[in-house]
Each structure stands twice: as structure tokens, then as C-alpha cells.
Image (tube, rainbow, N blue to C red; front, side, top):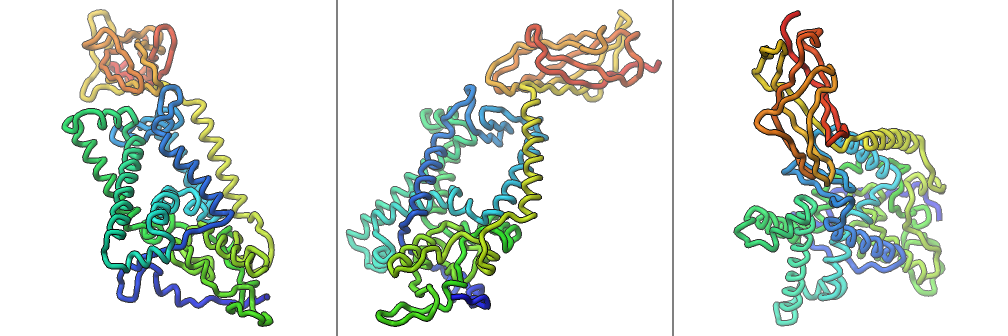
Length: 469
């Protein structure tokens, strides 16, 4: 039945499903979803969970697949090491990721939240499944919560929270491994606790945070704390693909009565879509509800009811607001095409930077407060500090040479040679010496080459000060 003038009751905007009139938390008991989309989410979630827990132990070229060591300012992505000196690569990567998030949200709405977000996957596919296993579905959970404390309730609640703590501990260790690396994590676990008090404290804190999030805070992360959830209100428009209720077909709502000729819409007001919602909203109030994570549980619930009463499926489905209002199929808009073009340009530029990126980077700076010096040989010397970064998993013995002007030479201070460690940094001090005849200006650029044996592995430039000509 068509009803293009349908307007949901906007009073729902004045309340939050998880807060009552007195301002107290309303604990949600969503029914366990079933259906085709839920099965697909389950398999995707299991695959992502396996990848998440295996990630810190996977290696490419001897390096972790992903490690974001903020304290050491060292980042490893797909076996490539990035240091602060790779600022432009990191900046372009961040811009590319930001545009991808914008484009993905503009086109597909909040699908990331319902299908890929770790918060949703852990809550819906791990912690709530433990609850369904130990306490039953929503009606049984409600009854157990209202019941006086007895042995049955005690062992179920105790077992549940013990498992929650154990899983939170595993999650904390996994996320810590992404920060400090799996080798450092193994050391923290196997060494005496007193040897790694900082790491042990971090694991305890992380475990407590994850337990609090998944045992108590839950959907409040999505509705209150998540910045991406707030950002979607700016990014979504009426052409974005979201989980939407087809009011053209469903309105006016009316309960299904036996042997009654039906003149109302297809929605029989069974509230199954509300009962399975993990954030407690009614999807029939419209698509512009920030609490909706696009998890598609309501689609499965509604389709199962439509099958029972012999009506077509997809009364709730993936569609845009304009698709529902105009009765058309989803289409790509000019805004989506423009953002896609920007994303392609950024990805090409990022690929170019990554392909042209050196495995070794050197920074040479004149030692502060030092002027040039004249020698008895008629040459001029400048004192420099050098820092060489190794972005590979292989050590290098390195030597320094002046590439230009060709007559220059280098003398290390305090050491006979430099060894560049794997995934590390070596620093040194050296004198660069040039004959006076090679100086054309008082502030002249020279090029310094870093060699491993006879192979030039990187080069850099700096300024050389000399006397007034």
C-alpha cells in the first residue's frame, strides 16, 4: 500500500532507548537473531576474529604484519617499517584512509559498524553468545535477572563473568601485542612479573577496560562514545544505502487477525524488529537514527515474519531514503563519483610514494654552535651529527662519503665505523672536510652518501660553511 505522506512520530527523538524517564540505565535484552544475513555476519566475524588474534604472530620478511609502537614511534605495516621521517607517507596514508571512510559512509552508510567493527563483533558474536549459552534467550535472561539469588543464578552469573574476564584478558594481550610486538609480549608473560611491571600494569588496565566495555558499557559505546557514529550524521544523505523500513508498503500498520480481510499495510506491528535490535531502537521511525549500526538483525527478523504470513520479504531492507520514497533502485550519485575520483588519485600518489621509498634514510645536521675550522692542509672542516634509520630487518655496516664536491672526505669522531642495526637507528658525529678550492660560496650544499660496502644505500644533503671568498 502506498503512503508517500507517512511521517513517523518524532517523539522518539526526545528519548533514548537505553535511558528511562528518571535518567537510569535501561538494560537491553535483545533476542538472538537468526536468518541469512546473521549467518553471513557470523562467518565474516569469525574470519576477522581469526585474523585479529593471528595478526601479531604473522610475519612478512621477518617483520610483523602490523605493529603500531607509539612509545618508540615505530610503525610496521605489511612488513614495512615506518618512522617519523616517513611523515609524508603517513600523512598521505591517513588522508587516503579518511577519504575512504567518508566515501564508504556516503555510499554504504554505517555498514562498517554492523559488520566489521571490533566492538560489534566481540559484543554480538562472543560476549552475547556466551550469555545466550548460559542464560538463554531474552525472556530467560530477563527472568533470571529478576529472580532472587540462588545456586542456579549464582553459578550462571559467576561462570559468565569469569569467561568475560578471561576473554578480556586475551583481547588485552592481543591489542598490546599490536603495540609492542609479539616478542615483547612473550617476554612480559614468561619473565618474572617484577621484570616488566609497566607491561604487567598495562595488561591489567587493558583487561579492566575491555571487561567494563563488554560486560557493562556495551551498546553505549556505539550510541554515546564512538566518534564515527557521530560523524555519520554529517556524512549520510538521502542517497546513502542504509537499513530502511519501506513505509510505502508497510503503512498503515495493523495487527494481523485471523479470517479478517486485510486493508492495511504489510507491517503487522509484531515488534520483532525492535526485540532483536542491539541498540533498542525501532527502525520504523526512520533511517536517520544515529543508534542504528546497520547490523541487519531487524531485516532477518522481519523476513522471517513475512515468510510466516505469506507476504513478500524485504519490508525492511538495504535502501536509501530516496529509494523508499521514489520506489526506485539504488544508484550512484555525482557526489559518490567525485569522492571516488579523489580516492583514486590519493591511492595512486600513495602507491608512488611507497614504491619510491628508500629502505634506509639518513638525516645530517650541522652540530649547533659550531663554526667552520681551517686546517694546516689548507682545507675547511665542518662538524655534523648524523642519524641513519634502517627500515628493513637486516643489519648494515655503513660508511660515509662526500658525493659532491668530489674532493671532500669524511672522518668519524670517536669510532672507526658505524653498524646500522635491523629495525634500528645508528647515530654518529663526523667531520666533513673540503679543500678551499672546492668552495664557491660561504654556505654551500654538499651531498653525503651512505654506503654498505660498495653499494650506495641512501644519500642526503646539508650545508657546508666556509670563509668569505
